[in-house]
Length: 257
Image: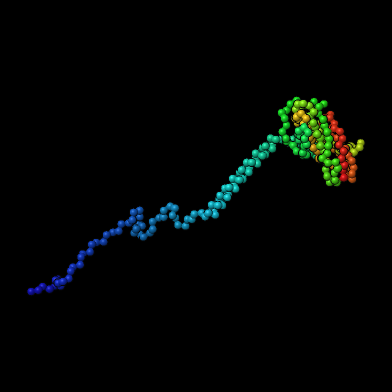
């Protein structure tokens, strides 16, 4: 007898048995919770989203700011050096007072000419005080005649006629610039001089030291009393005399237009 029931038809193969599913291991460095939840791992430093490198224009502006600051520091340093040098050099000129003129001096070699309104040139090594009998004082003006608005420059030239360098006091305590019109005393640099100063200059043999005074064409009297009258013009002739201590120059003649 043929049994029926669990007998399978002949000719059919049995399907292989399925193996149980294996759990997938999370990748190295990824936590189990991340693997299970499906979230991404945290970004590594330097790869954060939203960060950008500065553009070349930004770098260029930064370099310009740094360069500008460097230039400013150098300029301030150089200005400080110049200020210190000026302070050490001192002021070779002296204020002639409220009457209006600046006395400035400069040394000239023998036989040379001196530029107007210059100062601060080097002098030879200091030595003995000059023998005034060997010192000459000369007076001159920068022009023989002046226009209506021009201010004469009165020039005092002191020359060492000795054979060795010597010292001469050419401060406002010793210098006087005097303008006359005939016997009429028109102007003196001492009348309104606020304070007098000593200025010792060393003059080489045969060389000269020059003091310049710009006259404002005003009248003065002793004691600096205000004088309303002005010196005459229109071709009026005046004389200038330079005095240094007890040394007096010859007269220099000029005209005011």
